[in-house]
Image (cartoon, rainbow, N blue to C red; front, side):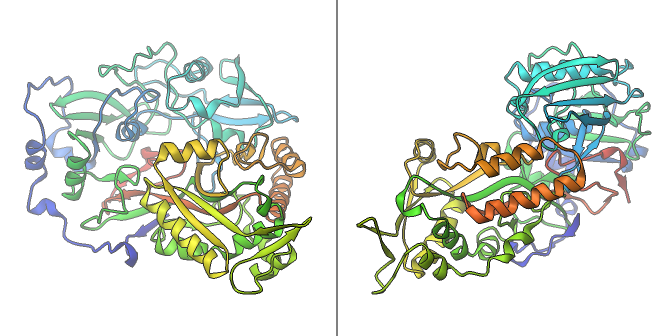
Amino acid sequence: MRRRMITAALALVMLAVLTACEPYDRLRAYFTDSGDVQATAEPIEPGKVANTIAVGMYDFDTFNPLLTRSQTVKEAMEFVYEPLFTLNELVQPEPVLASDYGMSADGRTAVINLRSDVQWHDGTGFNAYDAAYTIRMIKEGGTEYTGSLDDVADWSVTGDYQLTVSFTHPVPNAGALFTFPIIQYGTVMDGSSGYTPIGTGPFAYSGKISTDRYMLNAFDYYYGGRAAIDGVYIDMCPDAEHYMYMYSAGAFDVATSDTVDLRTYTPKGSVYLNEFVGGRLTFLGINHQKAELYGVNTRKALSDIIDKDDIVSSVMYSRAEATDVPINPRFWLYNGGVTAEDNVGADEHLRIDGWVNADGQGYRRNINGQQQMLTLELLVNGDSQEKKAIADKIAAAFGSYGITAAVTALPYDQYTARVEARQYDIFIGELEITPTQDFTELLGGGNMFNYGNDSINTLITQIGMTSDAEALRTLYSELASAFCNDMPFVPIFYAKEYMLSSPKLGDLRCPSISGFYRLPGGWKLQ
């Protein structure tokens, strides 16, 4: 989705692009260490420069897309490497190197059929052995994607262009697991700075053309047709500060919210924000072992009191989307409307659970002769100003209802140690939800809330055992209803992410959880 950056809360004032004052070549020279140029590729001829774009890069370690720890390198390699599937803005898997896939009835096995018309940039043909090798390298550990394949139990080549993968448990939306870049069979996984990237994408690595510049050229034999853009320059920056300065000067045509912090930075010039709802869920965690929080209506009251829209607006500056259930609000089977049926307010929820605030000094109740007072400690990561602001908002809202909530802000290590030890009443948490929308980690056995519900776990299992769209729609609706009826924890919002692009770029595909630079072969300069 393309939107001009006009949000008043971010104060993103559109000013003239700075390149008129400080030409890009001068900036690049100023921020580059001197050294011998070892050119291994020729730049595109001057007459063709108008049909190229530039991206920035810093913290360079290796061009190996599975091993790089640099976000900017990972983004640059999205032009070169491709996954089996990409996710659209509705978190639906769409085939890239795959042609389709099917699931077994028990939801534990996926058969993935692959394209047979794909070439690697060195001219060799792509096949199932490349995909199987990539999975093996990821499963053997040490890559950026190893954790995402925890549910993969085994895999095998069942045809030159067919891969069969088995899982440890039924996995919903299983195609969403296979959005990592596929590398060529036999690729050496040493992660060296001299690694030469060879992918299947619309742009092929041509080499280093100056001290701080690399070149990608459109691949003539790309199965999707030659890219509309002739080439991509990758420009090296010494660090994040210089990257931001050069981006401000208009040196780069695209960037992302993973490298440009929109909380502290105001883009200058005409900038388009291509937004999507990412996988990062912020929530209020509830310890179900705390006696005061046993009653479901007490937990519902806490949820009712939190003004999620206000938090999204005033703390997140609308860079998030509020949600009442843990399902991503842009997910194609999301049905947030199920929560509207509960018209009982927070006061009534508290009364149903026996809480009384008779003297205005706080809620009390008597359980089996023991008096309880609804006093809570709200734990938060004190290293995050954003999370601390959310905690303060929630504590103030609880206080206005007579519920005492004292905020305890701890350094990250101490905060996580207490959460993992279940030594909390409530806490502000954040978790990256897998694109499969599998909530086993949040709601299954051993979850961080000391929570258990067999009915919810059964629904999660059933979701993983069908690929029928109507059946899934019903199951996700039932899961949302069951969640709201028991309120294991309180979802607050999913954070938005952005690809920032120059107005000269057109035909961009909406970025998504699987990648900011989706299907760049179709991008055009306009």
